[in-house]
Length: 52
Image (cartoon, rainbow, N blue to C red):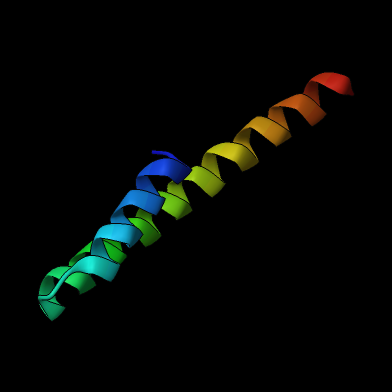
């Protein structure tokens, strides 16, 4: 789960000649972005919680 994975999926989608494949790759990119955002949010909450 990382931003680089999301970027790679998006780049592959942009180069794809097959519409169905491009949609699948973009879906994977979106899921990777969402997971990365959630992980970052969790880290920020933990840092804020530890600071009191």
